[in-house]
Length: 171
Length: 318
Image (cartoon, rainbow over all chains, first blue to last red):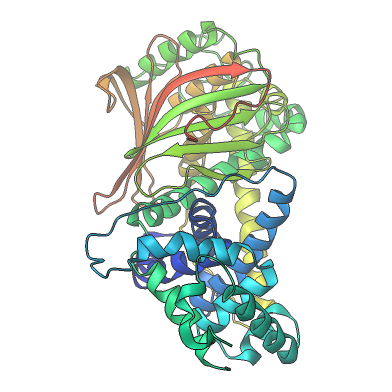
C-alpha cells in the first residue's frame, strides 16, 4: 500500500469506521471480540485495497467470515464472562442511554444463533433487503424471512428487553 | 404484530451503538502493519529457501568474483580475511565494529517461545514468536487498540531457517537480493492473475526498487527479529556496510534516549526513509522507524527479549 492508497483507505475508514465497528459489535454481541473483528476486517481490506470495487460490500462479506471463524475458534475455548464496556459518551443524555441499554441488547443478541444474529443485523441495522441478505449468506430469501421473524420473536421475550417491546405485551 | 417489533429491534440496535466510535489508532495501525507485513513476508520467503543458499552463493560468488564491493570479501565476507587494500569509510568502520559486537553477543534465548516487549507508536505491545513454527502472537495495550490480534501463522522465519542462511556477506547479499526479486515477481503475478479473474485490465504500478533498496529493506527486516542468531546478525551488518546510500551515526540515541548506532537509508524508489537503532554493545535492535516524505513517522521500540518453554498468556488481559 503506497501513501496515496493509504490516504484513500484512511478516508474510507473515517467515513465508515463507526458503522463497521457497530455492526461488528452487534454481530459478535461482545465488545472485545468486536474490536478484534473490526481490526481484522480493516487488515483484510487494506491487503486488497487496490482491487476492491466496493469497500463497504467487501467489509460486510469479510466481517461475516471472520465472525464465523471466531465463533468456531471460541467453541474450543471456554466462553469468557460477558464484559460490559462502558465508554461513557457524555453526549448521551437520554434517560435510557446507549451505555445502559447495550449490555441488555448484546446479552439478548447473544442468545440467538450466529445465523439469526447475522440476519437481524444485516436486515435491520444495515438495512439490506431480504434478497441481499440471502445472497450474502447463500440461503434462500424465504429462509431469511423465517430466520428474521424467529429471531425477533426470541428477542422480544428476553428479560432485559421485554419492557421495551410494549406493542403487544398483553397478548 | 408484524412490523412493529422489527422497528423496535431496528431502533434498539441503532440506539445502543450510537456512542460507539472507531478509534483512528486502529486505522493508522492497520496501514503501518500493512507495510510491515509486506516487508516481513519478503523476509519470510528469503528464509524459506535458505537451505539452498550454499549453492546460490557458489554461483554468484564466482560470477561476480571480479568485483567485490568495498569491504567485503567474496570468500568469507569478513574484512579480516581479505587483504585490507581497500580504504574503509567511517560508516563502514562503525558497521564492522557493530558486526564484531553482534558476533560476540549471547546466543538467542533457549526457550521455544521468544517474548519481545515493544512499544509501537503510543501503545505497549508484546510479540511472542514460536521459534519452531514461526507463528507470531501479538498482544497490545493502548487507547482504541484490541488487546490481541489474530495469530499470524508462520509470520516469521523459524530459528532453524535463520540458522540455515549463509553468513558470508557476499552470499547473504546475493540471497537477499535474489529472493526479494523473486518474491516481488510472484506478488505481481498473483495480483495480475486476480485482476484477470475479475475481468479487469492488469495495470500494476510498482515502485522500481534498486538492488540496494531491496538489500537494505531485506536486511533491516531481518535484524529486529529476536530469532536471528549472532552469526547471521553479524553478517547482516557486513551486508549493510557494503550497501551504498547507508547512513551511519555512532552517537545517536533512540526515542527512549538509549545510546545507539543509527543506521538509515532513504529508498531511491519511494523516498521513504527507514531507520534502525542498534545497541552498540550487542548489535541488538533497539528501535526501528520509518519516515514518509510528508513527515509521517512510525516507530517500534524494542524493550526486552526473554523466552519461555510454554506459550505465555496475554499479559494485558484483565
